[in-house]
Length: 360
Image 1 (cartoon, rainbow, N blue to C red):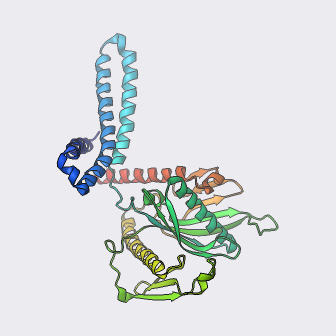
Image 2: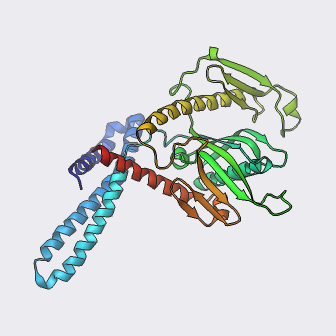
Image 3: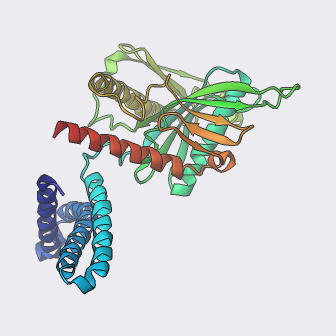
């Protein structure tokens, strides 16, 4: 283990002891804000320190095996112990390096998920519906809440566009690599000759912005229109101008929201989506500048970049960024995304570790 890594871990072990002392102090019980801050930090530091202690125990086991190996009669046993301790140390060191990687401040945020039909006409809209169901089922498995903000339904089913807010623990950390082009290859229900068609949708996953803390929006730069909502919703829908359209004049970004019967709530939701899109645009500009220096292995997140193909006749899903192919398309379309999501996260961590090694 490099000295710099070991030094950082020893400092974390010291900090954990300090946090134990602070959380046990009587005066902290009366200051809930400080208590929560210390408790949150403790929850982050403790697992890392626990792995560091396991690494040090493996280090001690390795030293003991070296001493034991001095006795010729114990050499075979010592060699086995040395190999086992060395393997544990290597695995734990990889875990510790990953645990100390720079954290993405947005990982804990909720997200806005936007899915738009692309090439392929009606089949693309149907696929957009399938993708939305896939993410909704994944969210359900994770215990997250899904709230549709806006939906433009297609005549034969699915969506021309659907926007949803997904709220829960660590949503962006799990979904942030889903942005990009998703392609489907299958025989549409309307295809009489059994030919395979290729269609595409674009997916955007954006961390929810705090309109006050994250980005400033000048009210003078907004045009706000109200209109009567369309689609399902009962008699009330077409009786009042409850739907809201907000246009950000400098950027040309347009956001509509008509899912709620309340114009006030639709306006608030549209403002939240607008703030998130503006923040996403700023983030994209920063990422493009960074990409000029170092290209990300798992993609830029650009909407036009093809990231995944869903081939129904062959029952496979392929993520092109990490060359991962899984032959269980039914389970994946039913929301079982853990294997793909975890593989993308591990690839990202490996890339960060490699970059840190180059900078060292």
